Length: 408
Image (cartoon, rainbow, N blue to C red; front, side):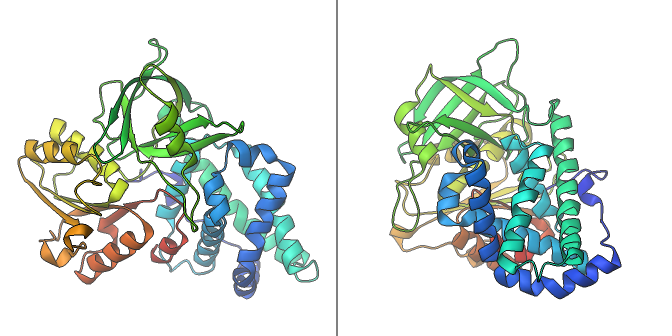
């Protein structure tokens, strides 16, 4: 991940000593009750503004509690850094949040809405006798330091895209639907307005796709781009998601599979995302994925084939079987077109799980990871055990994941 040297994310805000003392004293209490505070915050906000859960927030993540945990962990991580500046700056965390917000069209005004209901929840859970005026002022300061950093960074992203804050939605036409043998569907899009072509993008980025669902809700989900930049087209791949006792079905993914075909209209957002390779670099790349996490890697490989086929790259993938391996033929074709590529897969049906001890791990490579929680935790642990520095390891998150924040 590359962050511009003059980005707001490089700003190191200082918490005033009187506020820092109160945050240190109350952080354990807030952390102990954060799992009560954040669900109450969302209930309050959605009760007052039901359009947010209907049209903006991911209903699946809300049902699982994933968004609540991510918000809690983000605030706690940021507050911990403010009271102990010697800790690593959470700029990668803020970058991921900022790109996600830009992809959703978040505007500065929405931070005021979040502030209102979050602080109402804090007072209700902890009690007005605990949240005294000085304590409230200290946490208010933490919130706005974090919010201001994100607002400024998201402003940078909107400026780079050449749009006003929030103006990221575009109407497209589906040129082609490609049904992969694995069950994944790829949708190839062009602008519905020939005078306003779709923008270029960095390899590894994603778009948000809007779905008008049968119950009247308009839900947004992010999907990685799997084609090479430069053709005025955007392509993304979607796996059908069936629900179970632990997680709901994929509302938008299944809607796309069931209802969208060539010739249909689809609303998307401009590309964002910070799991992007440094296209000016020449050092080796190692792309590590599992399941549908292969999608950003497919886009990166397409770029390498077109622009820098000589760059050394190792592609490692884990899946249930060859039959469920998404975009397998596309990946194999890309590997065959590269001059210095190494490719290895592990399939559970063949008794294999990804073991990085079986491959050479270049010491000077940049490592890019994408997959489920358990997979990411396992691979990160293997990389760190092999001596790969944390700053060389980059990862994509398809859902809120609070456990990763501990490693920032």
